[in-house]
Image (cartoon, rainbow, N blue to C red; front, side, top):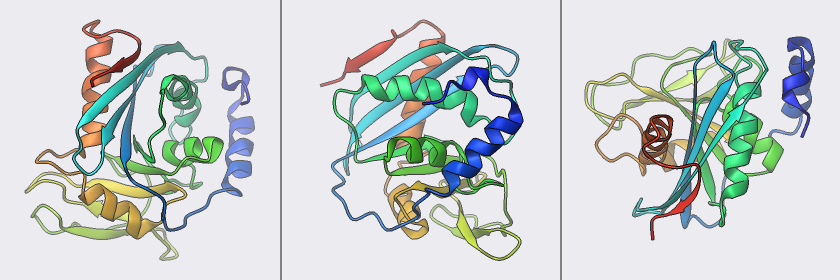
Length: 230
């Protein structure tokens, strides 16, 4: 993988365009015995990035272990290019996994991105791993507010009407999350899988547990590396 610490923003833009040519938004027909959630945390003014991946059994969503990494990055904080800060640490956390999940859900966007290259897509194309983006805020696209009840959703589209994903009400009367395929999963499949990962919280269980693990890691409550929960 290219050393992202040495890139300029124009060079990063070129890489996004090159990776975009390899995106595959296609139905996922493989096994689904394990699903994982990934979360990346950093202060925009800091060079330290914390990344975590939690692996869960599916469909029980029982956690089986987590991988945590702290990494120094030099690529600047630039909206639309956050993957260049996040992917290197996420790649290290991924490498630590003794068994890879069938699908990875990333706290961030997939193709619901101005250049279709959110963190879930960027990572998925590099690794050829099926990925889904699950973001807390909209980055790109248009949608109408979904109904107020859990499970309601509405299409997220670009200006030409292309379907990028969905705004999903994951909990009654809370702000929606934004679901879009990353790579090797299609739009309806992304929504279906995420709906099966909701357990009473706004965030789907894979990214919720990853978010909690990364926060504990930042507070030195749990250690870097791979930890089995079995």
